[in-house]
Image 1 (cartoon, rainbow, N blue to C red):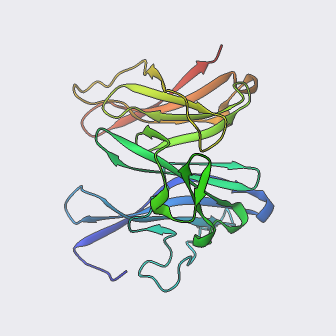
Image 2: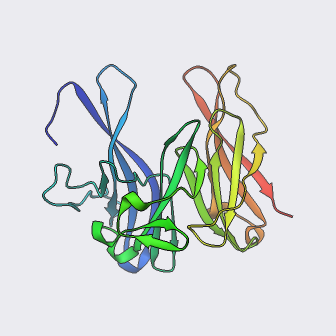
Length: 242
């Protein structure tokens, strides 16, 4: 990418994916641009950084040599895979979102965890049990905000997706037998403490499988709550499945 002094670049981190077999962790990230002095961001693409040494920074390897942004795995019209991630066996699933009226349309792609830095290893869910080599075949599997989490819940014996409902103070839960779905009808949970500022809503709801108790019967979610025009707090919420 040619440097433009009028444009600022920033990296937005996404899911952290442990890969102990290969003695590394993977960090999904998004490369953003914005004109200096403005707060309007555009996504250039998304990719995966490799973190092998906890005392050093993750490395953004070249994954697509010969293109203008060789460190970006997904770019241009391809799904921007930052929304969520789940590993099943030795397969990595990444979820991508794109704007769709008042919510975001979610699609999913998968690749062997060992080959996830190889662009050609990715397959995109095209519906009806079919996976395609072409990102243009990716279909919508659910609706969410720009962030969601997906993980296996042993108590429900299903995958559980957690996301905020855009423009509301509600959190949506979805369940499925497989990472690609079909996903259930959403179940809505209203956040118990609403924003102080009128007109603002809670956002960035995420599930935390690392905090779950009693085999997944008790789950913990976090969400962001605006406390004034410029600041927010992160709240923890417990949910119990019966």
